[in-house]
Image 1: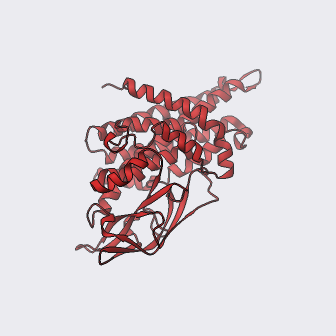
Image 2: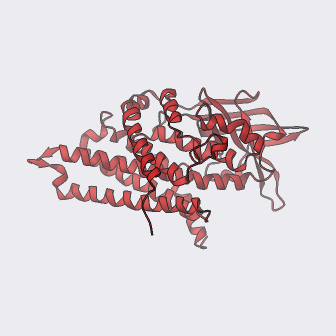
Image 3: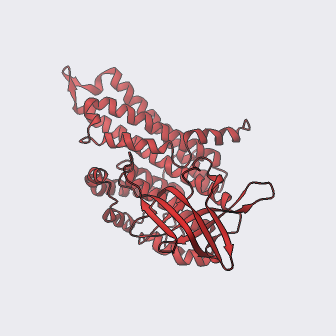
Length: 383
């Protein structure tokens, strides 16, 4: 088995790593403190080609493989979860559904600007009363002539209420299937459509510099041609999108875990107690060893899942495993990193505090850890 990266992937990793250190790290703490979405760093990430990485050059993308995309997301997350969330959500949730399920007309209309980072796009699933049970959407779309009328509320949507958000893909109930289950269909709703409102959410514990929104649809009319794919294909599109999204969350967990290890190594080598660096005390050295083990295992699981996707092999099970393991690996690494920093780890002055907060979302977003275990168990045939 060949675990080596290609030369292009190595160059990408090095380039994104340097960018994150030089452009994002100096501003990440202040943006987090102010709950500020940075259009300046967003523009710089776009200029680097971090949006539409896996999209064909025909539509303005970079035409790279999924492993390359994950490497880029990982390196951003190694420095800041909020910026990584913008990149990950835009690629896997915003651009992905349009690229994989959109009509040629829809692709031509939206993808170029999205891949250039001129605009952003949201993917709208969760509701106030439909989180893990996203298939039980209460947002409804009713056909009225050549239009669909949408009514409902969505919550916790990334990139949906920025100044450059062009629109969202929204999952709606459009009827009832023959088996009694909801018929679900996705629609493209552009920003500025009458009856559609997006409001930023504040007071978050994590990803404070990422844009998170509540969405409201009140007699919101969209043309019939704004349907994504075919009627009733929404659940399939949602599940396919979430598989890719889980790899993105996995990349954020892996990058965040690596970032925690980086900070813990630096601090414990510099901090001295009892006449020597605290890294040399066995209790602390073992924590560092455990962190390194978690990072390496997480990277192998995640890259394997991405390799399967790039080679058109089934990867749903592996995506769930990678997402679960990477998010929980960051949990352990963030916890150990704070412990190794002692009291300083609890202060904003040290970035490990931000990583500790940002980690928690990874065990909730794109399917909770409990849901990932359900997915894995179903693949084993025991549920």
